[in-house]
Image (cartoon, rainbow, N blue to C red; front, side):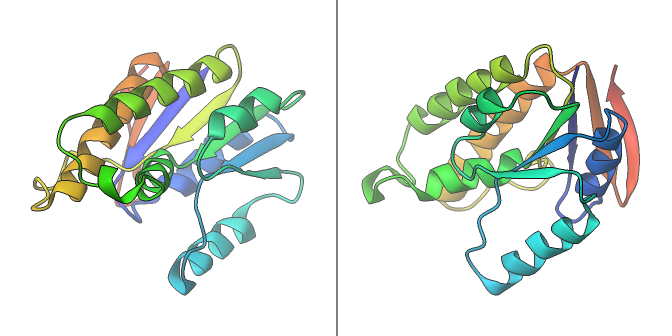
Length: 178
């Protein structure tokens, strides 16, 4: 069963997703997409690490969580945290000319990669974490809109395939689907 947990930044979605993943069993693979690019991000990653049970194994996959999931065997559950960091990492890895490019080539690319990730998770106990990009205003720059558009599509594909969708608001989880 695939479960999707969405919400705003610092809404408590990762903590809730970790609780959901814990219900899958003791052996959990934590697929981390965050990249420690600065001190603040390093502190966020450290907080996540401190909360995780010692039995959980970490797979760092900032650009391709599908490959990490495909290689994973024998786990009670898989937690992918988070899709929004993954989209941002892929966007920032684009050649300079493609960042902020007009059109939807990056969005389509991320949609294909999301389907590949969801296919790899099919038939497994999995929890996906993402940020909800659709609640704020439209970005005033092309790169921001490119990120919002791609993340919106990624989130929609994940929600379509998920049996449960949860939204966390100020630490309170709301079941949206399932």
